[in-house]
Image (cartoon, rainbow, N blue to C red; front, side, top):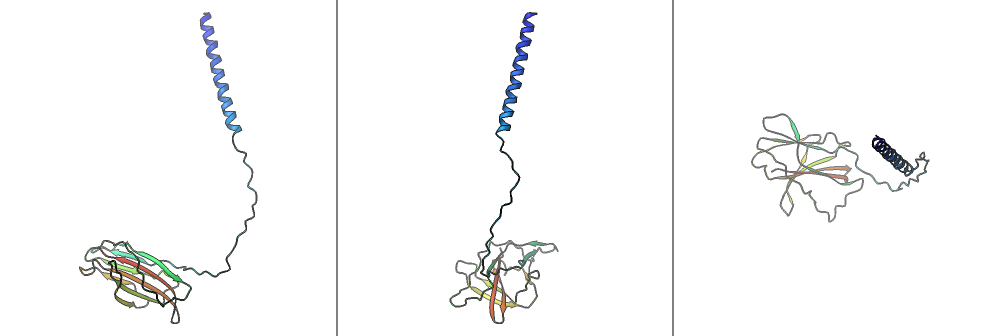
Length: 187
């Protein structure tokens, strides 16, 4: 019996020591916690530039593909970029720079619709430009799109492999003060 009592006391002692060790660990962990202070009011100095840097505040146009036989428009691969805004275009020595575009997959009979009705302000002039998609980009054809008409391109065998850029111009009289470009290619 004496052995049972001694074993029980040893077991009880080990349990007590274990509990104390855990309590010390918790205490140590609690002591190492950083003190949390209420947030102090910090004055920030905000510096505003005195330069008038205008930016384009308009929605980007959308490019949708409607598959032949379906009425559900789906987004089509394209690139849209602001070229300049709020300044006069420098015409001398400025060559067309066309966007590098990842071609989107089309099938014969599909329709591509370019819609810029959400742009505000509306562009003064819109041009559809067919460009050479090879390494030496150049203009193949160029046409002005009538005001507030979406561009619709019906995909035929001749359209596959072509690349287009839609150029949006904002003018003050005859002076171009803003230009954005949207590019897409058919594969």
